[in-house]
Image (cartoon, rainbow, N blue to C red):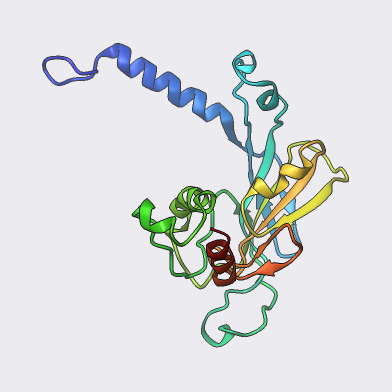
Length: 218
């Protein structure tokens, strides 16, 4: 809110500062350093439910626990230059502590044109269109150097055995296992957007086959 002179009212500034302070509580730097085969890592802790707001959340939201996040962890050397189209090799060791708090670039790919909803639904189901709308903002930074892991683990603060789940797409694949604590591993593979999908009939189809099957069923 502005005054007649064009300046910001003190009350509006206070609200903005309080909102920024509250947002800062949701994410904080992890207190521990993790040692891997290739070097040391430090991630961050993300709290799904803001402190002091449990009564305003649904029962499902209140069950969410803080997670420790490590973003952009290399699992292979960059597949560039002479390594392009070759089998992956181990990543190089790094010195010091690597801050794993930023998403790595995605692999180069031709992004689908979904600007026109009426045209897009002719090529794909509506559910897939909505999924792509959520996904595309995260796919704007491309690079051949894209072999990285995004790791999400319960913020337990100590070593503990947990179930491990690996997925090449978004965490929605974990909906079938929400009742147990999981160590979630998201793999940024060389799959393009809308790559092969597993269907309920037990078969894996490429996008062209899936779209053809969808058109025949309409």
